[in-house]
Length: 592
Image 1 (cartoon, rainbow, N blue to C red):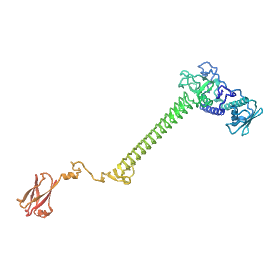
Image 2 (image 1 turned 90 degrees about the vertical axis):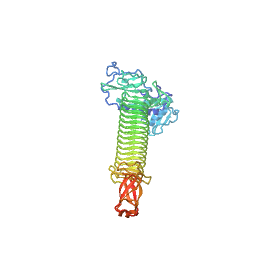
Image 3 (image 1 turned 180 degrees about the vertical axis):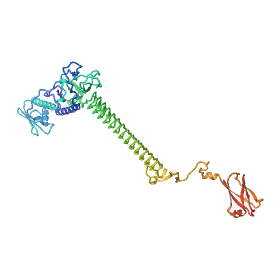
Image 4 (image 1 turned 60 degrees about the vertical axis):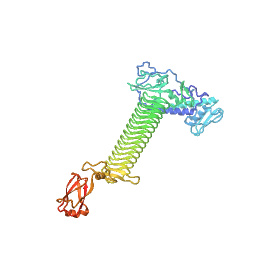
């Protein structure tokens, strides 16, 4: 298997080869580990019945290999040398070898390791080079010039790398004799049936094909992205060159899923038909889409975009910054929102929709029950189908509605609105300012009412069906109460604006005053004729009601004479007597 190091086509024995090889070793080790992890994800025995044949020329044969390379890949290092001692077991020895290659010293002085378990002494006594380590490990070489030193160190590193690679199980290697490199690559539907165009035409591509004997699945690995892991060691800011391929320093992007696409820097598309783009994005679900910076779409057909977003629910969609959509088909957008309930939707800033079909929006809102809706600022809808809106409102009962500022609706199907109102009774309604509705179907409005003092439960009738508050802070009072029997109590007067027309109508004092008058008439001694006397009574009609009563001073004479009012007419009253009185009689008349 060819090993490509940062030196490109230059052997490590040349003075121009001066990358930081310690880092190269570490990165290569990490790459070997990554490749091992990646290959471990391939189902065991995945092509056990398929044996590729490099020599096969019939395209219809199952063992035929498509797009065989015409590029000669050879090892870019010099001949391997044997290690004279057990130095490869000590990291500080490897660090010393790197120092030698990098010419950190003139060949006559000591070298100091920059990696490993501690300082390493590399010295030369005549033609003998010695490496001493804190653990006592030594390596000696019959040495000569500085160039010989570097060649010797390079050969030992070469041997170390080959031994590290040899530790990988043989069945995890791609056999170059049976592997097709297409450089440049050209995609077509006929060449790769059933796959999605990875848009890598003109690039060096490794095509992986898996078959179950009937169907073939393709994955496309952009070798240019893979090589960038090593090329960025050449220079931290300028492009490097490996085997003639120009690369820009950036983290590797790779695909593992069938027909998956990974572009950008450090992206991974491991789900079938997935897409990862941008920087550090991961698309691991089938048909998933991840694009942006540090975003993850980890479930099937999930979609994550923006910065630091996560869509780990099936069909979930997260966008914006720091959002998470973990429920099935959930949607989280804007900033630091979370939709963890199935089919939930969270939008705004730090909003949470944690239950199925819940919806939160605004800032700092939470919808935590089935079908709940929280909007505004700092609102909470924790009852099923509850709705909270405004600022710091709470709808905690099923079907509740809280709106306004710091209102609380806690009785099922209750409604609190205004400021600091509380509707704790079943089906109750509190509105206004700091009103309390604490019993079944009770309606309270106004300000600072005295709460119903009934000991009945919140889902039972209290004393009143309606209360109107007219109190103040620390001085609660009621302007009106109406009980369940229809009895109404007013703290003030009742004013009626219309005249009565029915018997049960309420009449005002003004109406009553306008409909009656009082007059006084005098029955003279000479006015009697045949015990009858008619006097003028202004305002009397033949049909209106009149109330006749003697004045207190005439009461005795009026009674002893047997006087009565026997007839009325237009502005007149007629009186009769049993005995004509000998004194004048004064009579009070109330006309209705």
